[in-house]
Image 1 (cartoon, helix red, strand yellow):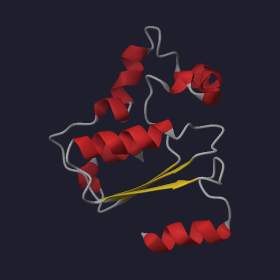
Image 2 (image 1 turned 90 degrees about the horizontal axis):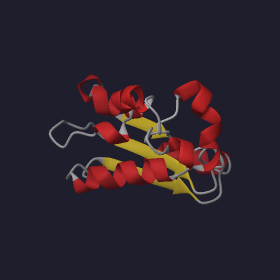
Image 3 (image 1 turned 180 degrees about the vertical axis):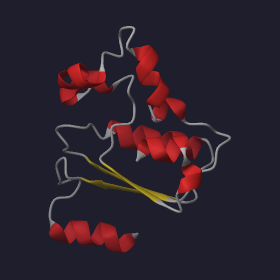
Image 4 (image 1 turned 45 degrees about the vertical axis):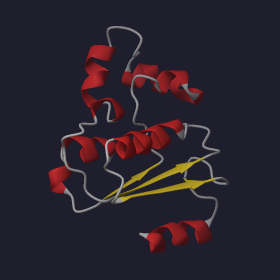
Length: 127
């Protein structure tokens, strides 16, 4: 969904991007990201030429539109570091695109983004 938000924001009225992998330059240096290099490639090699083409964080354009969106992350996610969501949202705020942006970070949940059904329902109701 991060790629859709960056590459084709015109197609969506709103986007929900949950526990995302957004920075393809740094993904392999965070948590278990190095174990995904066989699938995605190594951004510290010539693979970066390909990876940079679809890295949502690296392709944010200050001149493009941005539909309203909800970004979720989990502080205790042991797969996708919450850095991805945090930095993406921060960069959008710096670009002046924070007015229709909602961010939720669970401090209890794991990779699913929430700790339990009650927290999941709360996120859905808030949107």
